[in-house]
Length: 61
Image (cartoon, rainbow, N blue to C red; front, side, top):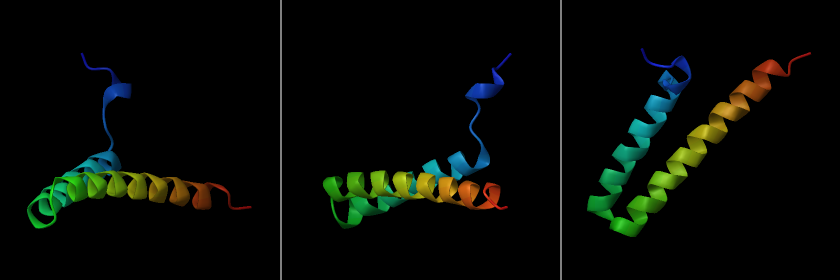
């Protein structure tokens, strides 16, 4: 049986899929270095966005 802590949530799946798609598009348009940079940027941006949303909605007085 699978461990529940190893499963990815919907947001993480969307983030990874978007980053991979952006990297593939970047690979064909700009090249491999730009694709890698775009992949990392999308991952960092989406994780930061999720953290910010959680922080805003849980820190309400």
